[in-house]
Every structure is written in structure tokens, then in C-alpha cells.
Length: 373
Image 1 (cartoon, rainbow, N blue to C red):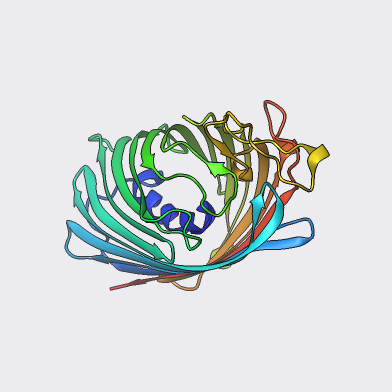
Image 2: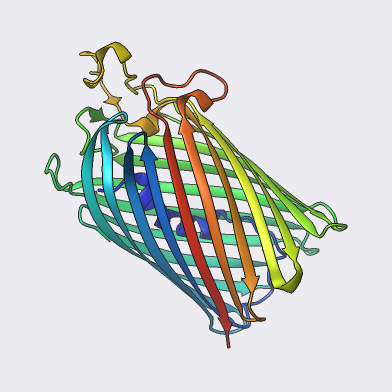
């Protein structure tokens, strides 16, 4: 069973259907041309003295209009993960290797004031099987200045870890989203979105010694976005803030800023930065430096416990830049480079969890898209 990072590659594709901000006016009809888009991601994270997880993930998206009112799209992703994962906190690395194949299919119907999208997903790896369905719709006002969007997705997962700690465990979830996008003027657009998640089943990590998590989890998200275009410099500023809280006691804040700057000869440069901070889960077990290198043990009366550093209190900074070039009116290539840093000391609004080593990650993503008749 891979880390949430590995599975998030497919989740991100699904989230685009439900959560993407409509930065441009809603189309009255299906796109007139088809689209083929290829992406290749190379990701590597590390901690002092160790290169840990490497992910290589090619993906292919194909979108084809069927008529003036309908289009269909499909996304196929296969990602390979290898390296070592911490057995507790950031100590005692454990070798791992896995491969995942994921497919998503969807159909979209267009009318004068909105869209409806229905789709499904399938993802399989050696110890994890996930099946999902999603539905999303948008509805605009007559003047197209206000657009409402809503969606629901459901997933059913089956977990069979290779160490046989559990067998045929399951997890079910429901995701809801509701949002509104408002054109504020010629140069400004804003968006507000609310999300709610409900899940039940097996949430523990079977590959960690001390990891027993509640079998129910809910979380809420609130996201606000503001885009502003500077006419004089032909630059667009994109900003967003997201607040998250869940039933496990985690609260997080994320701030994101991005600049989009076009240049001559059809070049576009998009630098961006993201700040993230979170509190620890109520059952996270902090390391006691006096006991290292031995792992910390949960208290004898603890009902739930985890030593997974992703459940700890920490802060993170992400910096990146995306460069794209339109080769002609049909074809665009792009390259994105990103650097991520995570440390307990970077946490805002309180102290981070003690005993955690710094964590860094870097990724490179290449993209190629082409429109066809």
C-alpha cells in the first residue's frame, strides 16, 4: 500500500472535475476540438542522509467533443514508487516498491448556462484497490458573472497489505463540494468553496508498528481564491487560502500565490509559492529525544495512536516555477520544477512536534498538449 502522496496523483485528477476554479467564462457548448495531453512527473523526497521515496508517473488525458452539447474525457495514469519509508517518525527506513494503474472516464453535458459531468475511476496496486464515482454541475447567471458549482464523489476501497497484518479490509467515503465564482470586474474574479468529507473503514497504516487510527473520519474545508489581472504589465496574480479541520484533531492553513507572465514568442512563465501549517492529530505520539534511537511507545491506555510524521504538527514551504511555450496554435509544451521543505519549526500558530528530522522533496514535471479536429 503506497503512501497518500502516491495515491494523490490520481486523486488530483479527480479533484479537477469537482474542485477546479473556473478561471474563464463557462462555455455554452462543448469544445469544438479534441485535446490530447501528456504529463510525466519525477518526484524524489529525502531526509538527512537518505533519499527516500521516488515516484515516476506518466499520465495521458484525451478529451473528445461528441456534439455541440456533449464531450467525453479519459485519463490514464501509471506511477511507480520505490525507495524507503520511515517505520516510525523519521527513523528506521524500510525498503518498498510498488506500481499503480489508474483510469478515469467522464462525460460532460453543456447547455446555455451550465454543465453536468458524470464519471468513474478505477485504481489498482498490489495491495490497494479503489473504485469511485463522481458527479458535478455548474450553473451560471444570465449575465455569466456568477457561477455556482457543486459536486459529490464516492469511493470504495479494498486493502490487502503484503505483510498480512489485515486482510480484505475496506474503506468507504463521500465527498461534497459547493462553491460560487463571481466576476468582480474587468480584471478581478473571486471564488469561495466549501467541502465536506465523510469516511469509514480502515484508515490505519498496516506497515507501521504503532499505528491504530479511528475507523471514522470527517473533515471540512473552506477555500477562497482571488485572481487579478494587471493590464499594464499583462501579468495575472492568482492567490488562494484554504482552511481545513478534521475529526482527528488536525487543523491546517494553506496560502498560495502565483504569477502568470506572458513573454514574446509565445512563452509564459508562472512562478509560485505555497505556505502550509498544521496541528498534530490528537493521537499522534511525539518522540522523546532521551529515548532515541528507540521508537516512542504509545501509552498503555491509548485507544488510538500513530507515529506517522504526516499526522504530526509541522510547517512546509513550496517554491516552484512553470514555463510553457506554444509551438503553434495547436501544441504547447511546459516544464514545472518544484522544491518542498517540511520542518517542525516552520509551523505557525504554535510549536511543531519534537523529534522530527527535516523533510525535503523535489519534483520535475514535463507536459505536452495538442488540440485536434
